[in-house]
Length: 176
Image (cartoon, rainbow, N blue to C red; front, side, top):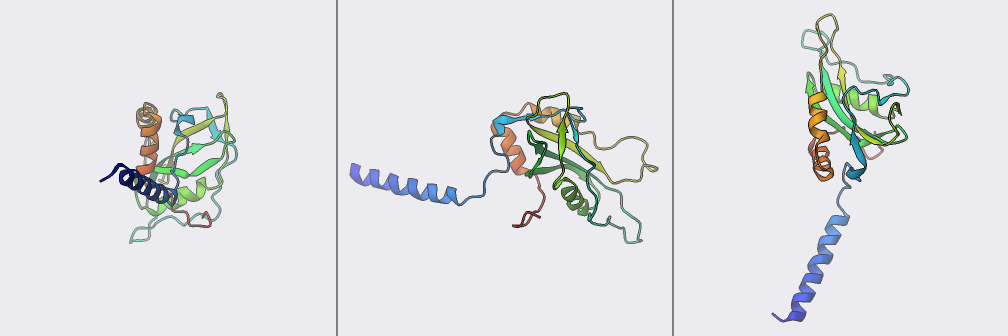
């Protein structure tokens, strides 16, 4: 094989590879080097408004008609304007019916947060949603502090991979 053929072959392979990559879905976490991990239950960031519950799916019921308890732990990026970067909503822990994932997605869709005690930035927030009867459970569930601490040590590339591999909300092409 001549040098000219090798150069042409490399050019063709490079163009084909670039074409395949350009049609790929964008990464869920863009610019991970700009993201900090917010400590779990930190006062740095809080909902600016109560999370809306209008239109949320009805709670799952057991075969005997009782509402089933559930817990869903998520991580998601909030930008410096306090908006949730929807494509980053990642499920990190849960128990109970999977229908509650959709409820959490609806709660976070359009949610606005406010930065307090920290300069606004892009932050990965860990939040737990408990759909259990408080009369049945003695203590809080869903402590994600150890998970947040582990993730805070990740390099930007590893953080992007971690977000990419987690289960996510199912939004259709219209964004819902």
